[in-house]
Length: 482
Image 1 (cartoon, rainbow, N blue to C red):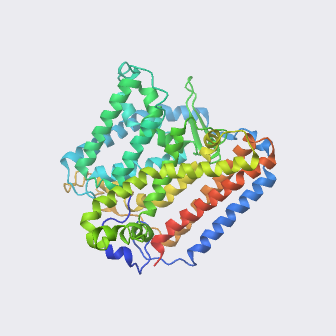
Image 2: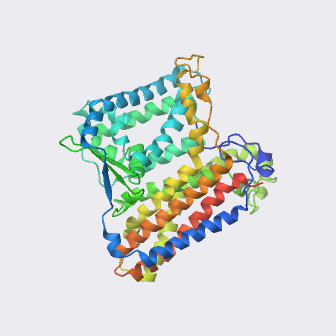
Image 3: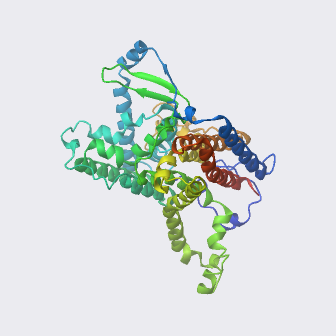
């Protein structure tokens, strides 16, 4: 089930939209004030947060380790462990993926009646992200592909050391393929089951070659993604070798403090998390549609002898190629933009640090933006479509079963007030960008010798955050504009 929220829109509807549409639900909603006022207000709050940090946040504070509060009595954690929840959860994860594959092959091919589409695209691909943002790296213990290979100890040791030059590039390639399938793949239950089997075979071959530990650290798409998101979680679970597990609480996003990206490939992965979400929103706007089909530069019409809209069937493959190319280039465009503003900060401070080194030091400061973009664009899908998995469990193959009595009632979506959705999106965008400003300022205080240089270096970064804030809110507001 692709992330695109409005499938099969008629061409005329893209040109003339007289009713404001909200993300995912298609319910009319009129903003209480012009959306540019939201954008300016968010930008002002961002600038104010920078001023406060510049005056009151110093190098001594930036050097302090993050504060953690241990919660949960050790005896309580021991009791929880004794309940054998881990084997139950592992079995449930493996059963869910097995059911998803089986239902795709033998079940009803209606996307909305088959268990595998909602389970994988919504409950897993989206829901697991948000679980990681709250509960940390739970996926490390419940990764279905790791669980499949766990009993094969000798098989999972690998036949050669993982090449350093590969770094995180396999995960980047798999991530790009994953997003291409989401946006353009038009997957159905059968094809999704085939994709899951192919992905399983890729993981088996890679583990056989490089070993379980290396592959699930560098190459497996969801391991890399969820581990990045887990760094921002307020909860941290730490099982010790002696079996005395610890559960600690910390401030959200504080896990990114004192962190440096290992490799530029991980930076590309992070930037693609940001750019692919922004691109998915941008490609649904009238501005993006008109960029190709209205031919504003008059490039296509002279070649065809007629307006592009009258050659829709002929140009459709070219439009697909155009969209694919833009998607694949998007993280590198963001990288160029990011490096330019870092270079500007380097020039202001006359720092001897290279732009590459600065990009690795400041790369994690963009991760909160990537997370809040993802949440604001897609969390409504969990409410409108993801919760329907309760009903699909009773009828996973779409054969008219009602195993648990939830086949009808369990498919009822949760439809929040549209004003609540919009306001939550604005606040999430603002919180994410303020967190990024804070993380970048803390890193600047550790990277530059004086507080004045640290503040100067962040002026270009502040401008970048302001641009991201304005662009993010503009994209979100487009479906609400008439």
